[in-house]
Length: 504
Image (tube, helix red, strand yellow):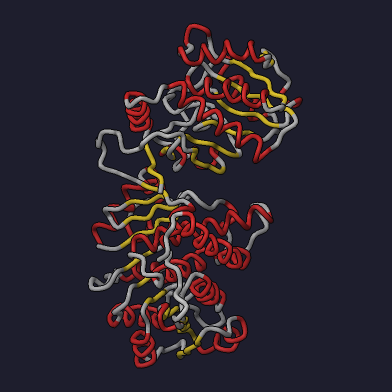
């Protein structure tokens, strides 16, 4: 699990590491090796240009250039800072470039390089770039070459993700030790590209508690909490998910939620849907139990019986927003004795008719910005300006867990706070949200706490999107592709348990 820090918090952690006996130069060497490893492993370029500023971010880039040169990779450095603003560590790194024979260029032709590394400005920069730095940023963006950013793309605020001026648009960012808030919001999301954390040996709890928010992000190692299945178990040991989804002729949403729940651990999945969907769903997902109701007037006995059989309930995908759908929702809310995952049309019904959430069972909602806007009465722009705070406020007021699906999904129960760093634009397709509800349901069947199940569900869903995008790009993946990729993410749980010696 990674903490998501502000620039001030990260600086305090840096200082604490140095005061505890790790010299700044050692931290820079570790950071530089992480950069060089990413260059070699992810790009293996013929020729690399590292654009360096005068701060320690630039020093990291210079040391990485030396490491690449020593490893046999052709690498040049373009220094865009000034001599009088160089930090002491960066001055040393700059002098070492000459000794190592690394080429230092002053007017590079960027099209001559197959990769550009942005080491211009670090997490402490908060000003609008100007002069040669702005020219370099503009040139990098216009180069058409892949860009790897060091720590955070130059020009992006590490605290807010906003850009006061020009900023680098990177394909990938290697950040040191922890994610920064600037990776999570506003321009920082797209500018950072795929973000990975490099462990350089800094303890990330050495900062003052000055703002009361402690967002965290899950990583692959956290999959180890998903328990191993015992050999003498049976389907009844792994929960029964009830998916209340699909109005007449709209069975896709029900299929995606139910199939995802199965993929992520549910022992039995029952779909409660309009009778018109019975045959298509039995054909699409024969593993599921399909219980049907009259879409014009759902029978209360049928709904209640299905509720009583369940250990987790999903409600909302594709149910519609008419009076019959409202009856379906209120009956589920009145009789539910199991955790609820509320999505899509159910959320629209709640906001339209001021339906109250149950207070005696855990409730997880998964709104996109428009749905959350209708629930809270705030505009989408207001929610975007305070993504964490608005989700925490609504969750606390209603005693629920909110999975707020902005560019970075925020998961909170009003106290614990997670930001999901997996996933990307490949998930921007119809049906993707239905897959997410099923994944969260599967995590609840794995005996995770509701807020952890929601956070883990968002992470797994995003990782499935990442895996699909790696094969198909960002444009082509469909919800069915993400659904099929879930199994490879779930397989990683066993790997992570073995790494940690976790036999549970």
